[in-house]
Length: 190
Image 1 (cartoon, one colour):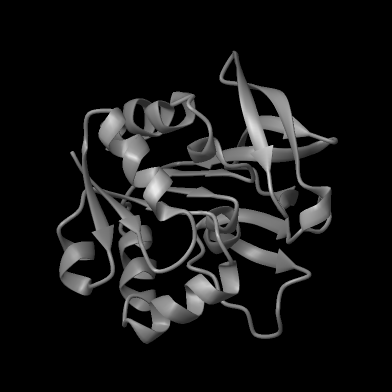
Image 2 (tube, rainbow, N blue to C red):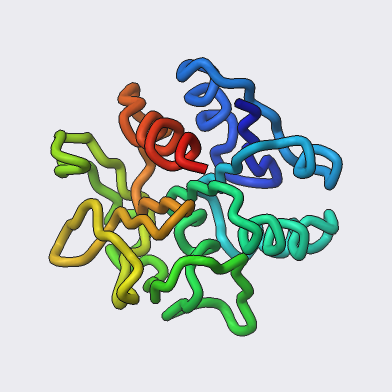
């Protein structure tokens, strides 16, 4: 499977390594031709407003929106969760998202950089170590959204159809469980 990782800003290199470790071909996506060549896409952590602005500058914003609407499997971690959400609280004025997930996220919900933390969570019946860095959480979600994990009483991992999002960074750990879930449960069902 050809897995694209949006490589405009953020921790895309760690996702590329995870994709390769899981046995798939990783494509760093910076051009439309690269986006058109992939079967699925990962939106990395980073700064959500910057990623959206760069996607627009590289003429990728609308094509990504179109691929998501057409059913391409997409996984977003942290900023990627914000970019997949349909609604944002505490966003920058005029902040745009690719959308697709019927969720409302709160940016920096756990606090500023100094409030970053690590925690063990339950995900798909197994424990995962989660790293939260200026992380969002889900404030509200629609009926088609499945909550896969919670922290501090809020959803931090959700799935809707071909879309998966986590507010934490599994790519910064050695545990590939979240990536494998994306490849085995979401990508293979398409």
